Amino acid sequence: MLPKAGGAYVYIRRSFGAFAGFVFGWADWILYCGVVATVGVAFAEFLQQLTGSMTWPTGSVAVSVIALMTLIQLGGLQVGSWLLQWFSLIKVVGFLGIALACLLVPVGERAPPAIPAITSVEPSVWAAVAAFFLSWQVVQETYNGWGDSKYFSEENVNPGRSLPRALFGSVLIVAVVYLTLNIALLRVLDPADLAGSNIALADAAGRVLGEDSRRWITVLALISVVGILNNIVMLAPRILYAISRDGLFTKRATTVSVVGTPTVALLVTGSFAAFLAASGSFEALFRIVAFLGVSVQICYVLAFFMLRKREPTLPRPYRAVLYPWLPALALIATAGLWLGSLVVNPASALYGLGLVALSYPVYRALRRRTISTGTNAGEAQR
Image (cartoon, rainbow, N blue to C red; front, side):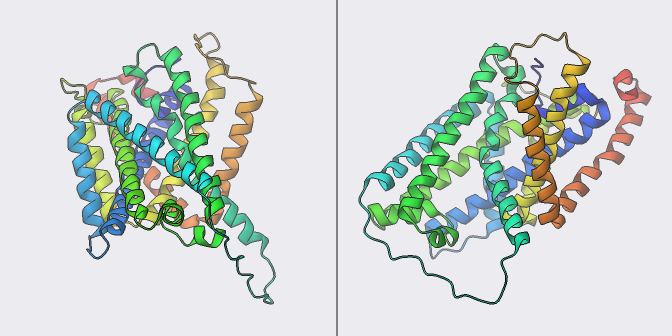
């Protein structure tokens, strides 16, 4: 319905005005910079496991791989798309192949899991609630990439038809791969083994295919991580580009190269993501990113309802199934996750909200500059 680059920013700005769009566009951009940083740290950790005795400085490796992927994206959308297709194919085939091996190869009898000693400590309802929300965050982040195609709406041929197909196809592929892997892992490993493993798939493959397979699983994990980096480094600059095009950030960020790359937005994104990777741990970054992601999701589900109320005559190539009940369920579930994240991880939530809060003085300064130059004055007044 709104085939513009920028994803959630476009919908929120259209629904709630320029300031709300800028705030949550800023949050969405920080979110994806955080994802790049998080995945860069993951790459460094997987590389350390692959090389064994060699010691790699995590921060330096993460910054280096982020810089490399940023330089690759300067080659244009075609280069990034080509890499995305091949990385995705290798990942899906590789993960499903290992999962099938774990499901089909006979596994020797496992010793029954050890029963923990009974203590005088009463089971904690709070601990169970905290564990539920922490697990939900991890699953949420696993599925989150299903909607990334919306950030490329403006560069998509016939988005009214192709985007819904891409969105539903992504959900189904992720669900099949993710659930198949989990079923396979539970067949081979005990819950205690899963909890204590950094790469559970490598441990499972080691049991059914031999210890030598661990190295190949780690290589597959590295390929998977590089594929994610390629996608997000290609995606995040388009948020900054969309914000800048509306006069809510520097106009330099709207610069597009002859090969279709928003060059300045890409370099700013890569630099900020590298800064985050050098300054934080994987887990801390992940919690901040997860909280920001849920915050943005709540806002664009609200925008979904607002657009139908304020602009009912807009052409809608796709109509939501079971409206308003299914979208309302999504809103309730996402709001529950947001509250759970706030209670369980208050420090991460505060860090995330602090980053978002920085948007207000920036917006005020940009608004004054926009009005003084007469650029997009009407939008700035909104």
